[in-house]
Length: 331
Image (cartoon, rainbow, N blue to C red; front, side, top):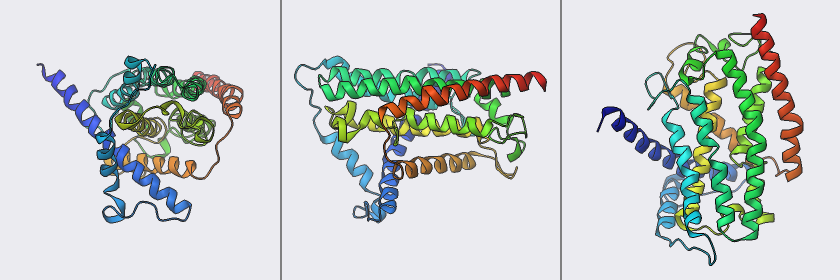
């Protein structure tokens, strides 16, 4: 076995462990955060501050039997949770957490991540269709239409950053922002961008990340009050667990991309001691914002969800792309 292949295998194993740990303890953080916001205790019995609750929940899910509904397409029903988790795991392989912590740096890293992310919609459609459940099917159609609608402004906004950096290499994008905090892409008229619309680009990308990960107020694919439990209504045991892990892994990946594209990656805000700890600090502050938004804002309607993308975010992102192209030509 070649050394490169061995490195990739080790990286995938580490990515799986990282995704599983994040899924477990981000659930704990979300439950504790929701409890604080709603002024109730939250998990606090199993271990100090309830820290043993996530592994106990994982053991409970693994101990349960995976039941397949009568009339379901067994192959697609089993494949859907795996397909939800696989793209998220593979995306971790090319994400640089620092100058030295990256499994496989690629000069088209952005393209690879979006290629894998596009497979997530297929898992939702497979889960709903193969379940032979009308609520799961309706939910999967919603989820896919939502994913298509919000991938467009997200991609256009990413192209804007790629034009500024002149590269699809994630490490190169971070290096161009590493001089100081003023060189981060989020700041207008400073550093590399010269674009007064870059804060809006950040908001567009962050909003699309919320929608792509089915987070409130955009969780129309899992609208419990309307569609039972959404596209995973018929799933239990680790089938449900893999969907859950995939959702939280996608939250981490979306936050990683936001940090890399707009917030300087692992560079320190003060120009000193850049490294993985700064990257993780920015990453988990963004994830804390995800949690805060989920438990603060009410769920929107499906028409409001789609109109926001097609009528507001896509035109704004297209204008931003043309404006950035003009600035690059001038400067």
